Length: 256
Image 1 (cartoon, rainbow, N blue to C red):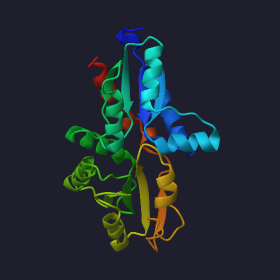
Image 2: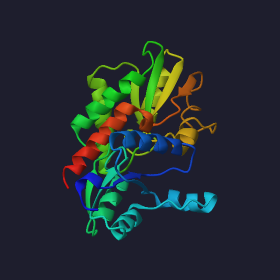
Image 3: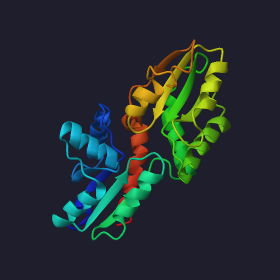
Image 4: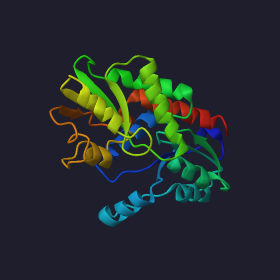
């Protein structure tokens, strides 16, 4: 089972315990169309999500190290682990640590944003999703991170400004480029409609609660007088974004 042609693919995501898991199913189907003969496995990097799924639903979702061990036991010599993270932050570091020194030779596919070219491609992929800027303020809602990889969110915001995309702002739930600047821009706008687009692979708990929740500190609640709507699906449903991930997957295959 050692030939490149049947090297298995491991899709490595942070994980979610919400209905947004349908995004993973969609992405797997998209990946199978591109690689119809490959064995595809899943791994979640979040220990919290794995525990929650086991406790609340009885679902035993594996971490990457366990998946690698299984593949090695099955006789595989190589595998490709494709990160489905947005930036090369803490979860991606955990992925690299799991791969390092393993008996399986593993090619690693980079996250969505890993260089300047990725930033431009991701913005190109999102532009078709944007509503009319003369009618709507749009906020890209990211997870954010305190990891140095937060610089990629700043680079995306800079690309938005450089291209002159009106009424489009980047905001994160945490870390640098937190949401307040984007929300303040929306509050100061004469436009009454604010549309959120999840800049996350899945539109899960953060979208349901931090962004659109009814609590007074949610993004929606902090925009009084505005009509707030949201794109219900995460970036994993956007084929042009998926194509960036799949190119990174192909690049990783070339390293084996």
